[in-house]
Image (cartoon, rainbow, N blue to C red):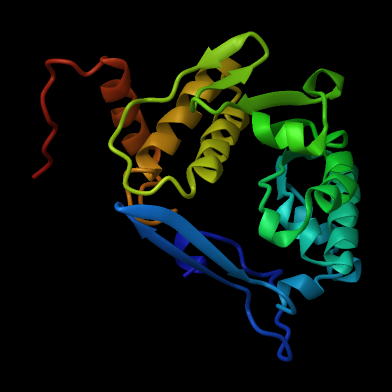
Length: 242
């Protein structure tokens, strides 16, 4: 499935003595979303620094890391630190999303392992509540800081992007979608204002679908969505290819 999505799996490591981590999500319109993680003792939790080589990041322009990996285990934490070193040696930008999940650790544990990593990132994508829990002052970070707020807006310095109003089927995955949209714009050298707008558009498309990935657009799909969200396509009707 990963290869079908164009993901390079050459560096995937198989641990025959450990299970694959599992996430179960109960999402229904009439009740609160419940997510259960079964990651303890998983193969991913056994990730170690020795399994990471320079080849993994060779040619990468951005290395994106979330706080979940270092919270899986002590060895996974050390592997994350090794990845930061490799990214720096390769000249790649480091993007970091805390992605806090308190089922993986206490607030104190998150502050101990994850908070220091934000200072080593070139781009930080974090919720205002996450920065508060980590006790990190965004003004003290050297990298570019994008903050997602409780009202679903996002800011980057003085720039502010409101969320696009769409019917929400499942909000899980919105943060990852936002990151994908922002980093895609960054890779293409777009102004931060446009990166924010594309990030909000990708997130808006994903929350309308029942899974984290079904709503992810290709380039043409994102352009059509942006035209619709911003009113640029008003009166043009639908495009039908036969």
